[in-house]
Length: 407
Image 1: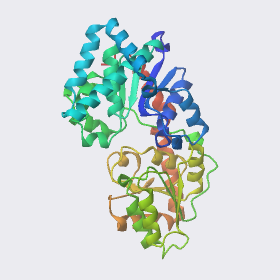
Image 2: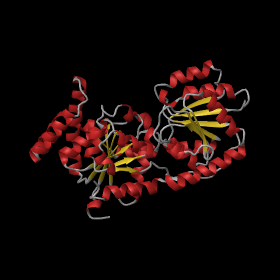
Image 3: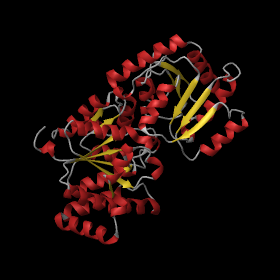
Image 4: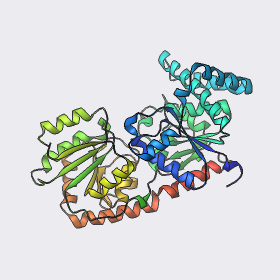
């Protein structure tokens, strides 16, 4: 690495660390293992329910939180210093915040909040001599990153995930963020195609595919999937399609009386899901485990026989990579970037979203054929090792950050 590349990189998200975004922690750890100093920043302080392991607690203790730091006196001082340092940059950033507002008084106020946060973050990055700012999740925190870059002159980039950003690209001014970024890391070909659809062709050369990844070495002590233990890991939100999975279980239990689903995760939809389980008479077949640490999730994957993800919208779910790294067969929906990861009939089975009958049939095909399940696990592990190893992907991301000539 060059002398410039030895300066710190800063990472920014809306909340860090979160139990649902462990892939960001792994990426940061991989960049650090390659000799880069990475400073983590977050707009908001994470809720204690996300600090489920020593890794999350350690990251939280060493993360700079913008909003808690934005006390009135400090906020004014940061902005006054930015104004004195470069009035041109300061007012250019303010104008950028105003003109990228999606419209309406409330949205305009939020843009001014983002500008205020950007002034605080810019002061912190200058103090730490940061050379590059990288953002995950291209919504409000990326707006802060874009404004921070304009105020400070520090270049920024972001990882584009989807799918929710693609529901409202105009609202979040995805076109402007791509135009101003040094580069954009797209997690899949599908993701890059959506970025192309919402940006000027002049900027398509900035769009690089860098997968989110996992550490395959975390998943060892394999046993062949021989039982009927299903696992789901994710937010308990409607978009994850869990009601469809529960309906599928209703039709499966008569033929597979030992069938059991463990649900790892939490969220606003938990109460409704628990009620559905009780109404359907599935209380002996479904367990809600809440959030778990990375190590606990790895243990749960090894102990499972099949991983199921019935989502309606996804990017490329990292939890599917984890399941495949653990040599578990997977059943998932045929949406967005999932087919780039999961080969239907190879590492798992893909079904139409929202179809409980198709989901039930796919689950039955896997758990009813242990030898096929074992073969799928082997194929899945090989796929992850080849294209979704976090160390390899972090090398590609780090090279983009080090390349000062990146458009």
